[in-house]
Length: 306
Length: 253
Ligand SMILES: Cc1cc2nc3c(=O)[nH]c(=O)nc-3n(C[C@H](O)[C@H](O)[C@H](O)COP(=O)(O)OP(=O)(O)OC[C@H]3O[C@@H](n4cnc5c(N)ncnc54)[C@H](O)[C@@H]3O)c2cc1C
Ligand SMILES: Cc1cc2nc3c(=O)[nH]c(=O)nc-3n(C[C@H](O)[C@H](O)[C@H](O)COP(=O)(O)O)c2cc1C
Ligand code: FES
Image (tube, rainbow over all chains, first blue to last red; front, side, top):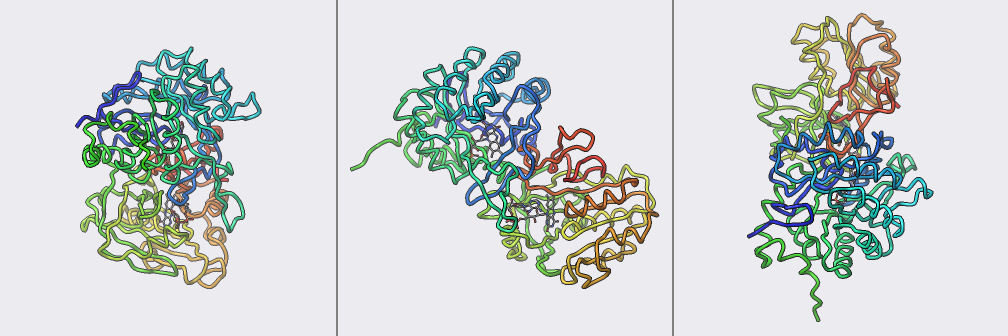
């Protein structure tokens, strides 16, 4: 049974990695298990300068999921390079830096600054951010903006760039084609879906930011559908799949839809040991469904019966 | 060392209206400090529920928590029974740093579900030979708990919002009457109460314990932050840098 996966810039011992924003910079969960077990680690978003984030409450529980509006709180890319990433050097686990910004210039600055770091293996470009210069339109919902930011970050960065798609669009394949056309080395999908919860007693949204991003098992069918559609449209693009993964069966479902590797987000909050538990279960699940390796299962869920 | 454990419930009893006391067995009990909390998973709920440590029996390797039914999760927790197992992350957060404090007389100020952590704190203070005075606020008589236990630690005053037990009014009313013969105060309760108490005792040294909706409970997700008083463009995580803070360190909304 082989769990290894090879993707641009990433040689993974298994396809499981914690998702950005759900694992900090690794320190806390390193108290629970040896991070060497992980395929890779995607760390919290980096922006050009430190960000405070949104007011609280920043999270709410929903049926089979949660809403979050953290607001990209982070110490800024320079502090991340000097104060956070060096801790992860002790592990032989590739690190993927997640980058965010309010303007194309900010993304480019973050990408360039990250060239100074030897501690990362790839970049995940989070385009689910509002573009302040374009009236707050999310980069990830406008194919032209998405193309532009991908193109510029690709040019600025020495590292492979995985563009993280927003699911808040009517046609995911249009977005996927736009960023792949602009040079993306791979895709990461999906980010959270915009949602809201209203407190009955207070007659007001629970989250201070009013809206938040929905994650967890509630969004898994949407993630599976979107990965399936993108895999149909782009048969070779590397895809890191995510959205509601809770166990090894879910991982296999993502592989069958067309993901090459997967990220686990919200599930870490419920079970801090979830990633190593899934890694331990995965070989048994793969062989139960007739696969001898992870790579063999990728995209094998597209049979049409009848 | 923080860890996730499956813990046996040794007892689960109702001690006041919609208020339950739960005793759990864990070899980690003797390492738990007053002010710290545990983060509890409940089947069918995506997020864990934070609950404070209310008491510890180091010899028996058990600890106690006290919770009130607030919403669905705590209602679910109220249905558990002795013998059931509970999935718990512990120990979480910082503690009241009494080992570093020189004090002779401590004032404990608790409101509602903020009362439990003060009991374990009061016990440790008393063991150190510190005089303990407690002022506890509840909504009404039916919600009062642990009065006798606090009385064993020292003078104890109860306020209820509706006057159905103790003195009618707020903990701050009682504090005004007591004056301030103490060197430190320690407070836990709803944010409006903490705000009133910290304003009232602004010239006193004190520690407060805060609540906020949490995601991870261990410091990775930035869900649970509170702005700093000295620089409101910076914040701290309640789950990891707190829940205990110096009274003048953080900005209460
Ligand atoms: C550090 C800390 C210690 C606590 N100690 C105690 C204790 O000893 N005894 C006790 O009865 N309660 C305590 N609480 C409050 C307790 O966590 C909430 O009452 C509980 O989470 C409510 O969950 P629910 O499902 O019943 O309510 P719901 O309203 O259905 O919960 C929905 C979501 O909001 C969160 N939430 C709601 N109210 C609070 C709150 N006040 N604080 C944090 N999260 C909240 C829930 O965790 C859940 O994620 C503590 C909170 C914190 C942060
Ligand atoms: C609390 C929280 C914070 C997140 N922060 C980020 C982030 O900084 N950058 C990013 O690209 N995605 C972020 N995400 C999205 C996740 O990485 C992931 O794409 C999404 O949650 C779906 O996966 P899940 O259902 O397994 O959580 C965050 C998600 C959560 C729940
Ligand atoms: S709850 Fe995640 S950082 Fe505090």
